[in-house]
Image (tube, rainbow, N blue to C red; front, side, top):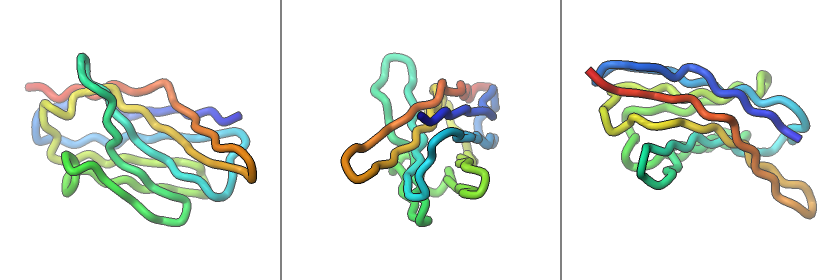
Length: 119
């Protein structure tokens, strides 16, 4: 089992920055991927960014150039640096960890952290 704990959300003005963190603990395999999702009220969940243990990253078009995902594998932590925040970035942000063994895939979710972008 894996536990994920996000932190760093809050209220920020448009154009501001926030840095989200997600610490994973438990039975973590050396090869995995960690993602940030978000869900705004009344909207579908959106995959924001992915970072693999091998160093690959991917971003949603809506955040490219503004958000940066990074990892500290030694600390089992993933970060999401969010710059140039817009009101449409307001959402609950969730961290996930995906890993698999020889027979099964596993996906774990954190409890989420709220980000509000408003003046």
